[in-house]
Length: 255
Ligand code: 4GX
Image: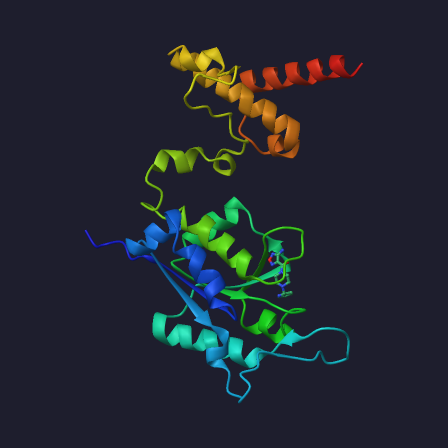
């Protein structure tokens, strides 16, 4: 059988060290060492042509702040395409993008080669958005000082979905957003800690009961903190009956 070609990821940034250091640690660091993912970080300034290596300029029409200039970004992607092959997607990280979700991570993990452009300053020249980026993604509704953390978030979430990156495939499939529900509570030893005891069912050895308890806890947590997830989660009749019970209990408690 042909060896699986590892997923290629390229990150373009004016702060390469800010991206490189986190990538060297943990699950992602190990995946890179093992050749399961091939991540390169590119210094945008290496693709400038002027004496000052500038990557930004004042906005046409006036206004505060600076805008990332198109030339270095286009040149960086051209160089990546030459050295690494044509990417399947060029992502611009920006608060104006579509929300990056687990579903988006699953889609990107199937692409084979993805470039992430880290925006800085007030943003990028709109010709980058229209003619270089193939998509624009936001990691959430808050304002960061640059696209480097979003790029790391995207690389991390995508890397975990590449076969072999996370040791236990079953645990990836069981993850919160893969299942559509929040996680059930986890405990480890000791069984009693400063007088706080682990739920007895977990020590009972009754696997069916443990599964039922976990399912119920996951449903209760989801109802409490992320009720909108229940609209799209796969629920059976027993789940619905338990949720109904929780809602009734809550109504009694409130009155
Ligand atoms: N999820 N930021 C990007 C500059 C910028 C603005 C517009 C391109 C277009 C963010 C987020 C985020 C702050 C990174 C503004 N670049 N990115 N930067 N939230 O807040 O992705």
